[in-house]
Image (cartoon, rainbow, N blue to C red; front, side, top):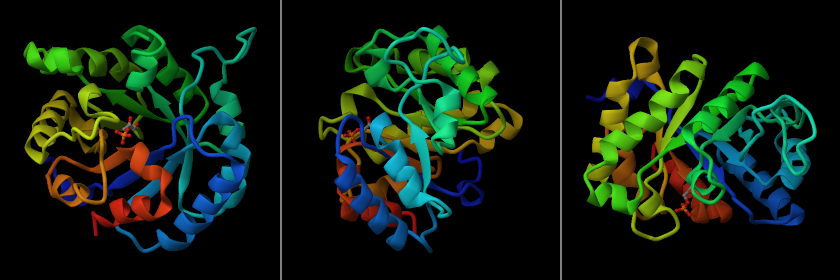
Length: 247
Ligand code: 13P
């Protein structure tokens, strides 16, 4: 079930994770801003929090969007080390990653907390980019669909009209073990099938060892509406090549 990929504008997002310093971020933004115009896919970047001012200033008034990699579910308070949705919005973000597997598995964040983070993002006008994905053991145990359904359904009541979903199989992240186009398509079609009405138009991005070499075959799948790119996004040339895979 494609749901009409042609009507959904692709989105290619860079998740820098805990990489880059200000000078590198500035150079990246200048190049991607200058060279991504005219591409069919839109572009977004998720920098570490200290890089947000430099990224926001370099990308101001342009088409490349910015997002936070995580946020706290409360609006403010005594939460040392955390960042609020209001602070992300104030720093120029329009997106907030919710439920990245490195938060779910590295920081023990469960579905209920991820849903509260998505709700906080929405309260402050940010668009949640909800990440879901199964571990290798869950895939081996034929639990992929059950995991994806559980992770998606927990957040769904809190999502606005304008959000995006990323399918990031944990076994494919940072491993070089990219999902085949068929595996990604099957998961994306399953996820789209769980969405009702207007939500079926929600862009579903694929993440997990995307490179300029494998992007075109993935982008050709009817339910793959973009990418969430980690390692390869750090190099602006590679990121631009991945954006162009949708042209
Ligand atoms: P890699 O592209 O490095 O596998 O990371 C994917 C990811 O986690 C993006 O959020």
